[in-house]
Picture 1: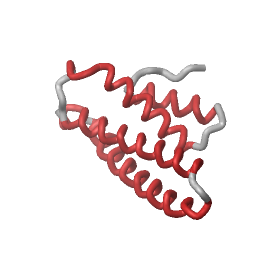
Picture 2: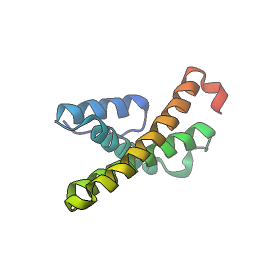
Picture 3: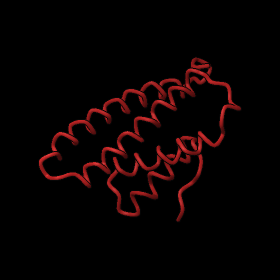
Picture 4: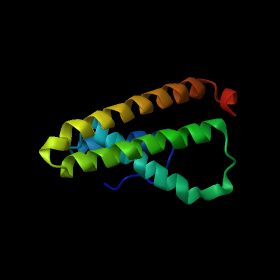
Length: 114
């Protein structure tokens, strides 16, 4: 089943589920889903007004894109570089957790982030 081309929380969650069902590891599935969301967001263009939450969501998407690139690097690199690249990827996951925590806080009361 193809991935949903959207950047809503629902679209991202559905895409993560589809990727996990297809055999991807959860972090890899999330990276792919957020990368797809980032592409969908770019298609919307500059028509939307930027808000704190929209820029925060964009930062989260970019973090997951960085994770996806890191996973590609790890899958292609020589064995002696795996631990160094894994260290970088783990750091990116921490950034994503921070952005997600902030977004979740505002999703409870969306008026606060406008």
